Length: 347
Image (cartoon, rainbow, N blue to C red; front, side, top):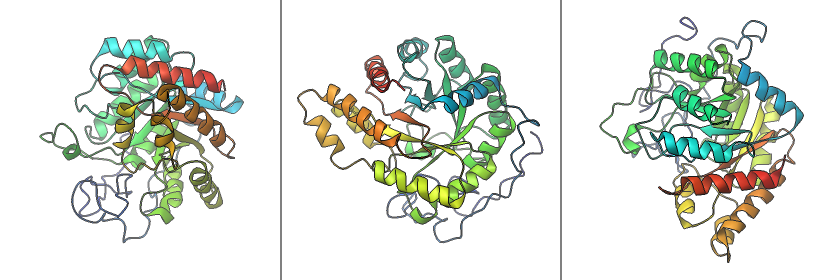
């Protein structure tokens, strides 16, 4: 992988040193998530992928985990669930993995959103796999340079993860460790290229309601040219919005599979956590329906199942991501909710 990427030609003024921006953290008013200024990419043309072309499968075959997940996705829609375990807590991790194993096809296990110090992605994935659950591992560019990322990708291939989800990541100024220097040696598109070269099934995220809305489908196309196979569609308002984005992407020639996020809410605590997600847009009345119900837990599961089944009717949608989290100390309880929702879907 040494010659795969050239040094980044970062856009002047981007706090994340992105070359292929903008990220998904752009405010609805066009503001940067880090400071009180406009995203520097919004007034420029779309940055097209000018890196290497993804290798052919016979040149760089898929890893064992990627091959298994790709084969499964050809037979039926899949259910991916966010991973609610506490960071740096092997006992919580094993407990949540055991609760999710079976009902869900893989867990989307990136770095914990409220903690900056983490187990490494490959070590975390190995612990989850040891508990009997397949992993779709998130890799961010905030905390690792390209050499560290290449090492993680090699380790993840050895572990046999189902996929690698490539994100640029939040800036350190937004989390609990503003004293830590952000790295941002690469961005999500460049990591997608490295992940594909390492044999992974590669996913990226896209936010259809985040500026520049009119270029989000085109930006996804460029990510697929870098190596992405799957797009996780961030919370963008429901079936109509997802369907519109998928159709726009198909019209541009995007062949990637789509996995839209389905909001998981069972109480006020999980609602608050979900509302902390950047660029969040929920279906109209979704939270009120759940939180005003006599049994918010059961109503939350019912709402997620209904939305999932509607999303799966969209041509090009290959599965759903049960997305959300729980407050501290309720991780196992939330894992049970995720598992029950997946069982109701029975895909």
